[in-house]
Length: 98
Image 1 (cartoon, rainbow, N blue to C red):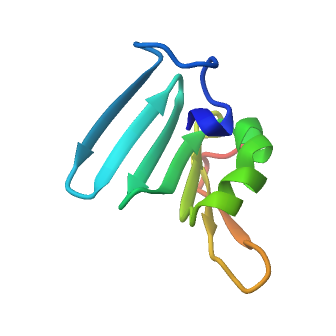
Image 2 (cartoon, one colour):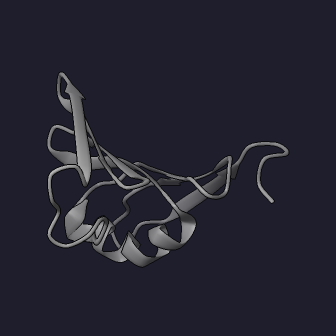
């Protein structure tokens, strides 16, 4: 997460937290959250603007499956890798996105 620009560089003790079970781990840096499965970043919870800033680098490095926005309740993106690119589908819970 810090390689994508989350948190102050360099991270110090207390700037991030980690929790894991089995082959899944959750890393929190500030308000951003990343879920890693088998060592690969699979899910993120970030502000919408942060996602637009990190998406090219994140998708180039990992097979991210889902991104949830923390500042637009109910909005999420689901990614599917194709031969050239990462089309995403935005989803918004009924009555939650404004």
